[in-house]
Amino acid sequence: MFEFFKGFGVTFGTMFKKVVTEEYPENFPPAAPRYHGRHQLNRHPDGLEKCVGCELCAWACPADAIYVEGGDNTEEARYSPGERYGAIYQINYLRCIGCGLCIEACPTRSLTMTNFYELADDNRQDLIYTKEQLLAPLLQGMEQPPHPMRLGETEQDYYVQGPTLARAGAEGDPVGEQVR
Image (cartoon, helix red, strand yellow):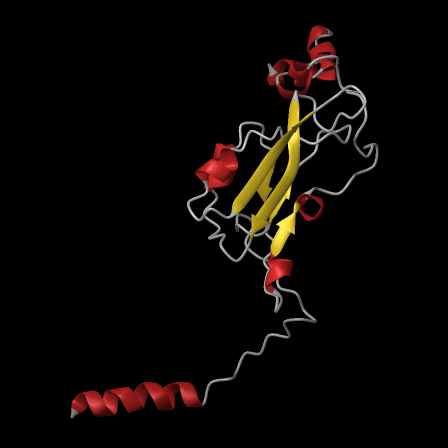
């Protein structure tokens, strides 16, 4: 009998509290900084894609939500600094569980997760994101691929230590020395 009144006490206690209303579409609340939201395929500073089409993210995905098909770079059409690039890249957000294992598997740090969380849609086909939707936007100073490598002559210049950082370290710049 005491539990009965105890339950009503909780109800009456919350009945007279002020209701908090969030104006969601107009007032877009930010997500936590480390929230795992929509994926993003990153670029190098010259605009080339970081994805080398290795398919490790697809292999690591426990929900089988990622499809990658690698393509070969040529001198006429270079999309990434390596021999290969991700020709077809798709993430099915109907299957994605947001675990982040694909991020951990990526050897080039091409794939990251943003904190954008509005992924609901009423059309199932719109929840399969393609490479064009996942690629990071071109920033100032970037060039739309395909184009030749601008940050160095080899793939190693892009991933290990770029030529600008090597020169900075050689000139005694403390920033360049910290990178080593």
